[in-house]
Length: 389
Image (cartoon, helix red, strand yellow):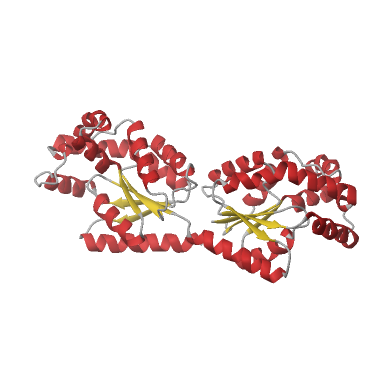
């Protein structure tokens, strides 16, 4: 999804530019001001509660605002994204929006601020008052609203600046030129959106081989928790010492171990276009952990791809690997192999359901030679990315 917040003081021209953005990108329009005025006209309970606050230039409480926003989003399930006009207006609302975006399995791409001098704003709003007859556009209320903006809303800029998502633009001048500058920012933020693919599948499905190929093809960073833990064991580190008993038996290691390794890998690659994850998440709890790890760096899982092979094929592949130099300790005998497959079914199937419920589950047949499987995987990822926008 493409999610944009159009920011700026009252009278900056957000409504005008919003119309042009909606036409270009086919987004769901969230204007808290418009929605509140509509509720007031309809005479709803929410509208009556908001009426006196708006007429005095104050801010309606966050609970009512969120009810309106969720109502609007739920009536547009096929939306390509969301354009927020007039929200968030406080740092509290910024945190609320972060939670709302996480609930929708997406994030805000950018906050674009239209910068206009106060004298120009007052002139625009007084002119609008004559044209529209809006009760909240008299001089006294205008000054109150601008003061509210300065005191409560301006800090929101700092919130998004720290996330590298804040883009101030000159809001004075030709409308079309301002719009062209807005579009440049939107396209820029679209192009840097990260792609994060989780590869799941039975042990022996070929996730390691295909994960490496996928990362190289799409310019992603490959993260294999198993590979990293084996290196820690080889290096004799404290993490390796803790992981070894679990790895030897092919069991799931305590969550704090992969968390440390994944965080380290992400931090080592701050400019990555995204990541391919193999071996994590393997449990439902780890799926929640993954969301938290990525959310900390303003990312989310783009898709989970299930590499499907029959159980018998998995046993054959693991047994064959056990007779090569690539053998793992848990390939040593049939009992260990069966134990891994049973663990996969018990622990990882709920992860599949988790991503299905988010609309992020995809699958391919992972039988056949390496090239055939990768062609299927590559096409699937290309289709996923195409649908993203």
